[in-house]
Structure formats: structure tokens, C-alpha cells
Length: 290
Image 1 (tube, rainbow, N blue to C red):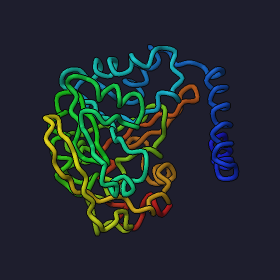
Image 2 (cartoon, rainbow, N blue to C red):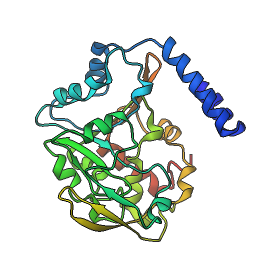
Image 3 (tube, rainbow, N blue to C red):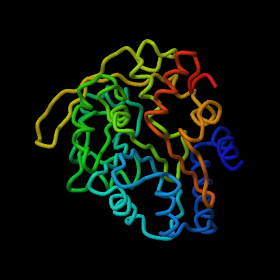
């Protein structure tokens, strides 16, 4: 109900008024909301979300919405401890705040893999700064990975014009039965769904990419300059409802959504979800048609 009210206010109020009201609401929520303890959070990661030793995990997160009773600085060490030396953690790490084509049309745009700060949240930014982190060179959909398969999952991302295609970490995790989790957010932020579109290409029933190939200057970890080609998303992909699609077509053992102390979480089996979404797309059932 609260989300529906916020959405209505966003449509009806001037932007400045809406942002001021949202800030007041979030401050009150922060003060009144019950806290998740460190032990509870660890149990959520392992027992509820299914993260274990050796897991390959793609993590979407919103630290501000988790209402933690301990420091957010403890999250990444906890995750690293759980997956261990055989596991891999992956985070979205894009640095772009505006639409991709607006960014790429700027001749001064440069993606510096070592220094471009991500806008995908606190946790991905902390991960980006880890000494053993590998960040993919894709200029619009970069990810950062830590762990055993970090380099392997990110090294070829920039070699494809499809940001979420076969050479991207979004798809590559399916080869390792990767897990996708949401911490403090629900599946409406599940970027993995676009992997099905990019892998199916013209076979996908909805046109989700513009035809134009954009160029972007990229500086890699060795300060080499290269030019990367990419497609960008069509504006039409804004007309989607991932949560409704999941609840309508996806069984809980494939993608589970739940709330704990009022905080949203989700966990999805990447391989099973990809296969089911591909089959549904061939029937014309997509996140754009529910």
C-alpha cells in the first residue's frame, strides 16, 4: 500500500516537493523500523536466500532499505566468509545516472574501470574498491566480481554489443548454477531478466534494443584506451512488470520473494529462471505482457 501511495504522489507532485516528502518519510521510517540483527542477517543469507560455501552469487542491494542493527561495512566480509575461497560474489557496477544513449552521445564520455564510481549502491562501491576485485569493461552495464571466478566471469563482457548477452556476467552465471539475490529490494530490480532478451535477440517477441551501435571510450586497469561498441535499451522496456511476471509464471523454488521485518528479499536460481523465461518468451509471455 505504501509503495502505491508513493507512486501516486510521484506522478502528481512537482519533483522538488516529492523528493522533500520522500526524505521526510524515509527519515521517519528509519527511526521507527525494527532492526535486523547481525545473527538474523546471516541466517537470512544462508537459510533463507541459500548462499553457501562455493556459491556464485549475483547480488542486488539497497543498504538504506535493510534497516540493519549493525554496520553495513560488515556485509561484504560476511558474504565473503560464507561463500569462502571457492565462491564468487558479483555486483552491478554501472557508473551511469542517465539513459545510456544520452551518456554515449557525449563525445567526452569515458569509462575508467579503475576510477569511475558506481551509482548502484554502497555495497557494489565497497566491492569495487577491494584489492582482488575484477570489474568488467562494458561501458553501460559494468559489473564487479570478487572470488574464484571473478576474472573469468568479467573478462569478455566488453566483447559483445549485447550488454546482457552470452559473454556477459549476467548470462555467464547460468553456466555455474549461479544464484541471484536481492537484499533490501524486490525483483523489480532484477537486471538478469534482460539476459533472456539479449541471448534470444530477434527471436524475443519484444524489441528491447535500439538498432544503433554506440561507441564509448574505455580505460582499462592498465591505463590502455580502447573503444567498446554496445547497443542500448529501447525506452519501451520501461513498460514492464517483473514482480507480476514472477508471481504469475515462476514457481517459488525457482524465484522466491519474501519480506522479513518489512524488508524485501528475493532469491533466484539463474539457470532455471533463464530456461523458464526463454520458454515463456517463445509463447509470447514476457515481463512486458503481463
